[in-house]
Amino acid sequence: MNEQEMDIFKIISAAGDSRGSAFEALRFARKGKFDEAEAKMQEAKEKSIDAHDVQTKLITSEINGDKTETSLLMVHAQDHLMTSILARDLIEEMIGMLREQSKANAL
Image 1 (cartoon, rainbow, N blue to C red):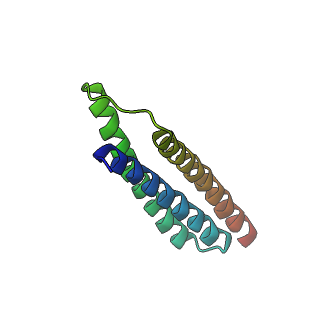
Image 2 (cartoon, rainbow, N blue to C red):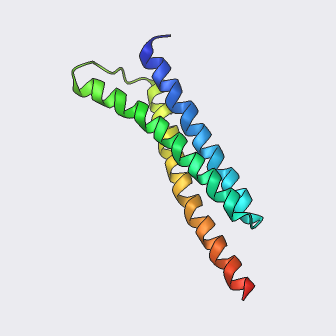
């Protein structure tokens, strides 16, 4: 396995971990455990940054003249990254809604 393929797998792994942490955060929020949800969302963001850093490395390499092979694996990695970011953003909004609902019910 070459370095580019290793980087692609790093993106897939970090993006999947980010998505998983975001969904764990949502499960905590549904139980009213907002501190735990916030911690899991922070974890999701950090993992997303890890994936984005590898993506940026690959983009920078290509800009500097190193040819990046567009493979099905690369497309798969990009798909994982984009959907994990979208899931994280939507879950963040959902947690906010659950928090607001919880406060309204407490009144």
